[in-house]
Length: 180
Ligand code: IMP
Image (cartoon, rainbow, N blue to C red):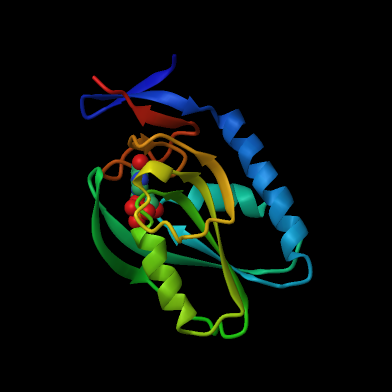
């Protein structure tokens, strides 16, 4: 099994670069079907979703506007529960379809908070696309992730945009913390 070491911890490969691309393409196929003619605003959440969003939108064949927002809730390997908006949307979203693109939904606190914030600006509809999801850590069971690439176990992962203290983002595959 392929593995990487970061700060003395071992992470084992969970999804190869090729496996990720199969997931990305299959998500894009569904999204292309659902969003034809709707001209949504696609909102990718920095930092983690930058690589996923870049690959995903390359498959999109419908008209849309693409924006980044930057939200932060993580400190090291733990969700802090407090959401900081470091870069906000500067576009009128009223009566628009919004598609949020996220790297991973863990507790769901970040997107639950962000969805509520966007809802206050009266969009027509908000849907979520997340590459990964940890269903066992989800606190907001009502958080609807319409497009989910893959459910994973409740272990910390790095790679393909996901970091541990700003390291590991560049890796083309996704690696999971090995339990010792
Ligand atoms: P949540 O609010 O607990 O759902 O956490 C969402 C954010 O935490 C994600 O957008 C990631 O940036 C980060 N995150 C959650 N789990 C992991 C992980 O296993 N590795 C790296 N970042 C993670």
